[in-house]
Length: 183
Image 1 (cartoon, rainbow, N blue to C red):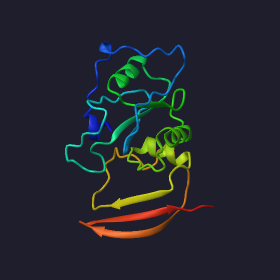
Image 2: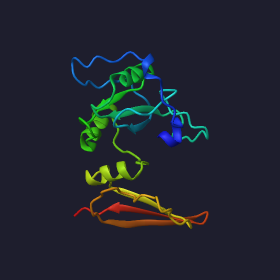
Image 3: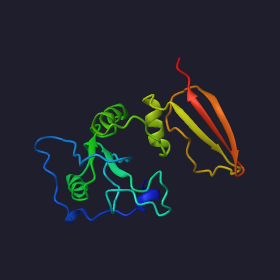
């Protein structure tokens, strides 16, 4: 999300009214939307300029999607004030780290989200894989070699097996789609 949509911008939280946490960590919702962009933002570090994704390319898969933040309780109360000021809904799913299973239950219950397209890095991918929440893979094989600093697809992942369901070649790349084996 940071690289694709916020450009590393971060709000000045000194101008934001902190949310009172006297009643505990309470999810904050703002009306329903047609589709969502869910940001797993453990400590509240993403700087949004709108409550909806503004995709410079106008990609219909993203552009106009309502942003939802999934946070841990390790977030600055001023960041919560910033999200409320921006009318960005947020949910809590864990004390210091994100509990993927709790997040998925809340996303389903509160927003009606049944399916997520996970486009994260190796850390969030690994968290979803360890929670056994990855049931499909779409892998693109392109004629590019890895850099010495590249990370694995699933950081600290567990062994899982998948069955190939389709292969497609396009623009010099091969797209392989897999379904998780249910054993």
